Image (tube, rainbow, N blue to C red; front, top):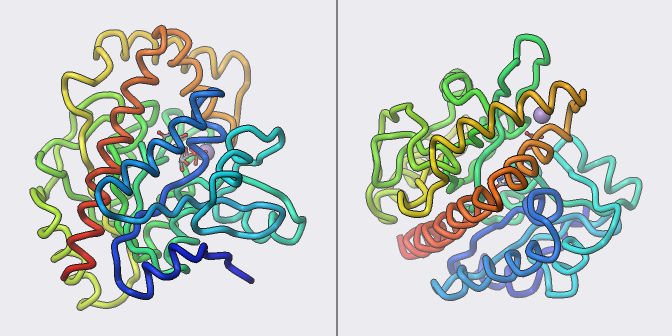
Length: 302
Ligand code: PSU
Ligand code: MN
C-alpha cells in the first residue's frame, strides 16, 4: 500500500515536531454542508495556532492520505458519494479506487502507520443501546485495542450505551483517563454519569503515560484521553434526554441499521434541538483538538 503522507506531515514526523491527526467522517457524514467545510478548516487552524501540524486523514481515489491540502479537504466536505470508511473498508476502498472519509478506527490505523501518535475527534463510537438485539458495537473499540495512538475525545457518543462501552474498553484492555476530571464525559454533555478510574491534568502527564505504554511494549493498545465539553457549552441535559429518546425511537421505526445509525442519530438530534447539539458537538471537538495539540507538543518535547 502506498500511504500518501503530505510533505508537511512527513517533515514534522521525521523531525519529531508535534502533529495531530484529524478524522474526516465527522466532516463528510457528521456535519451538514456548508458548515462542515468551515469546521474542517477551523479545526486545522486550531491545531496550527497551538504550534502543531494538522494531519486530516481520508481516502481519495483509492489512495490513503495522511495530511490533506485545502482542495482535498473540500472534496471530502462537498463531493457526493464520499463513503464512510471504517478500518475494514480500507482495502476495499483502495482496490476499488473509491473515495471516503475515515472513521476513528480507519483514521487511527492510517495515522499510526504514518508515525502520528496523537489524534483528536469528537466522540468515539461504541456499544449501541439495543446491542443484545443488533450486536452493533463500533469497530473503533477493537481497533483501539491494537493500535498505539493517543485519542483525545469527549468520551463516547451519548447516543450509545455508555456503561456498556466503558465495560468493553476495559475488557479489550484500552486505557482510559479523564482529562482534568474524574467523570467520564458525555459527548454533548460534560458528564456521562459514569466515573473514570484515572485522571490526568496536564499534557506532560499524558506524555509520560505514552512513554510508559511504550516501555511496557505489547499489546499495542491506545490511550483514550477523555476531555469534557465545558459546562457552559454543553447541551441542556433535559433537552438531550428528551430528544435522544425520540431519536432512538425514530431510528427503530425507520429501520435504520449498520453504518447509517450514528449519522442518523446525530442528524436527528441536530434538527430537533434547533442546532444546539451541533454547537455542543463543535465545542467538544474544538476543545479536544486544542488539548491534542498540546499533548502532541509535550510528546514531541519529551
Ligand atoms: N465524532 C463526532 N461525529 C462523528 C463521529 C465522531 O463528533 O460523526 C464518527 C467517528 O468517525 C466515529 C464514527 O468513528 O462516528 C462511529 O461510527 P460507527 O458507530 O458507525 O462505528
Ligand atoms: Mn455500528
